Length: 255
Image 1 (cartoon, rainbow, N blue to C red):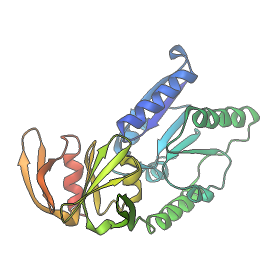
Image 2: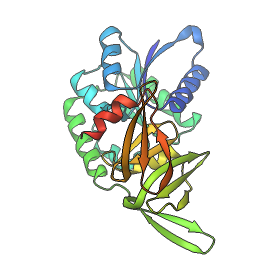
Image 3: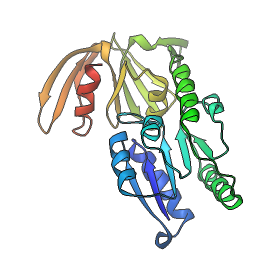
C-alpha cells in the first residue's frame, strides 16, 4: 500500500506518519510526504497512491487547487482545523475528514471508513463540482477570520484586537501575543490553532514558532543562510525567518 501525506507543518506530519505506522506494519505500506502544492503535484505525477491524507492549507496554497488541477481517483482524507460546517459542502460519501487536534481514534475511524467503502464498492471520486463547493465554503469561512481574542488577566477580562498584534510566539500549548505597544498577552491555544484563525494575507508564520503581522513590520534586513531579520512595532528584538520559509515570505510580502 502506498500513501501520500500532504501536510505543511512538520509536527503534524510526524503525528500522521506515526499513526499510519501503528495501523499498518512497515512491510505493508510506504508513504511519501509533501508540504506544498508543487511538491504534491510532482509526487502525483510520479506515483499512484492507494489513498491521500491531506491538510487543506499548504505552504503555497490550498490543496483543493491541487486536486482540481490533478484529479485523483484514490480516496482523500482531509485533516484540518477548519470548523465542521466547511465540510457540509461535500456531496459524496467518498471523502472523510478529521478535525485538528485529532486523536489516533479519529484517524483510525477515517481509515476504516475507506476500507468499508472500497469493499462495498460505494466509493465516489472527488469531482470538480465537489471542489467548487469546497472552495466556496472555504471562501465563506475565510471571511469570518478572528477579529479579537479574549484574554484573561489577573484584573479581569481584556479584549485584544487582532489588528493590534505585532507578533505571536509559541509557548508550549499556549501562545504569547505582543501588541504594538509592547504588551504581552497569553492566548490559551497552540500556535497552529491561532494561525488557522488569522487572515493569511495579514499574518505569516516566519518559522516554526513565530507569526508576524504585515502591518506591524517596520524594517527587513538580509541575514546569513538565506534568512531575513524583521523589526516589528512594539517588539524590541528582531525576529528571523527560517531559511525554508524565506522564499514564501518574500512572495507573501508582495501580495
